[in-house]
Image (cartoon, rainbow, N blue to C red; front, side, top):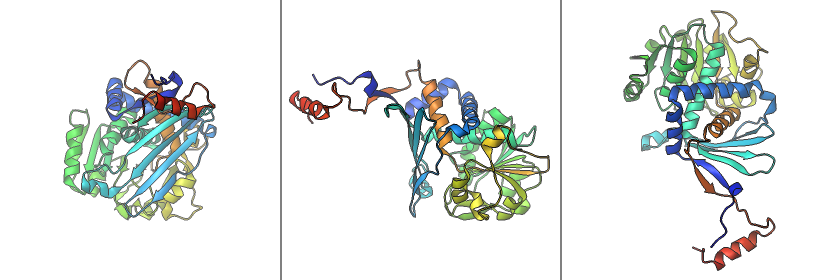
Length: 354
């Protein structure tokens, strides 16, 4: 018989099916709340993490990225793509998987899908930002762009911030109908709007997430009144924006990691020295968030590796006792660490060759 893998060579793998089981086991809204709290906890210890802009490979069709970080004990990374044209071929515009590893040994600890998990953590990060930046008592959100992220954003804002009404608009009415259908029975008052202008009327929180890879002006300056909070999450690569520059000039701007956001976020439209506030400083109480009721706050979110680390850590902590994973053998683990070739040779002798 071939050598059986040891326990240390087997790591838990969470498939898409098991991720869905895990989320339903916890509950979608409770999972969003727990993820929000996990991300906020890691923002509070921001200095513990290695921080670097994601490693990106750009093409005309989209981008493929690696997003790594470590807190000195655990290392994590996410592989993720962004290909807006995929939708026309019935493919996801964003797909992802992620890994956690033990810094002390380098051995992997967890491998998981992250397409669903990224949608959840992106919504949780928006909700965390809104918890610190949105007008007190905000109850109405406009959702501009009703693609794959829309329902997650709405439910996270409901569960964490307490919104009661979501006003939907997308350039494609079918996307809006899909979102309204999926949010039926959620407890939210869902309003389908005929234009982006109509959608933002009366909204205290405006979340914008569109897919086109271009300098776009989805929201113009005259559409944004005083006192609102804007979550700008669609601009996530060079050459892609959603907001008119004048909106940025009127706003108090909050970001995850400036070296990355200045390349990929809305603030790529501004001078390199334009003042921004890192969100972790607000979470820690070291910087002001919303200064008064008339200020516009803008969370220019491009996604950062610490958020993925938090999401991976949440999955790792939630898995024990659920059975929502399967062990996979991806680490060669010979009886004698020096005899990797011997392990290969013996496998051939035992007839395990393909």
